[in-house]
Image (cartoon, rainbow, N blue to C red; front, side, top):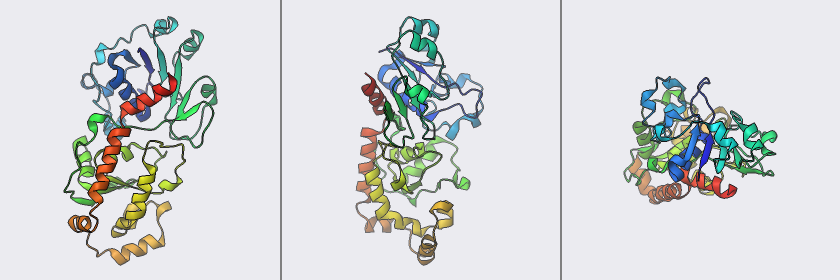
Length: 328
């Protein structure tokens, strides 16, 4: 199957990478290899090309963790004469990986009756109807069901997923706290992943949008997300995340947060007098990991269940199959 993947070109913008578009491309390349032509080429994803580029590392969002260097054979892909190939209906399917950032060649795609679909991975819940009325439209932050619009969510390259849960974690709660920049101290992917794999729990929450790569990075490292305010997430957003189980986890283990200073954990909208009171009452409590695990013997089982779910449901291959199954 020959697929043209039209990626947004972010060379002149604040960041090169685009998580939703990048993750779907990765899954498609896992399935169809060089038959997937990314244009313009996502050079930062290719281990054999990024070394040839003189680029601004600050423009790789999230330091490129989980996305950078996940593909290879950049120069094996024929990216020549794309417009002519579209006119000749050379491709079986054309995918716009970030339609609100780039609609390159769209007039020709429609004029020559090519099969196509759109992906909208923006942080808002806005549907661009001039595109959704033309073809199938995948929306990341989908607040409710709409005609011709389907939900889509982030995913994880399967090679990044931890093989086995760490049986002897060091931390009850992962040191990185979302929104607290002083805790963003990890300069390489290995130490960032180990921070989660060596922890029982990690805090996560909605960012600009509900879907956030951090949720998946926590899960793929055998760590249990304590997801703040997850019950407010729209049903049609983050449809692959095991929401029911994560809500149960939060309800059962929210008390863990009372052992930590709420002023360092919660954002203002989550802070309350009750949380401050619980902290003052519990700040001398023992946060020893061994004691916690002995009191909660099912915690390793929960970590295993969530890691197994991640392996089976949250890979980029699953993401690509979902998109193609709904189109073909």
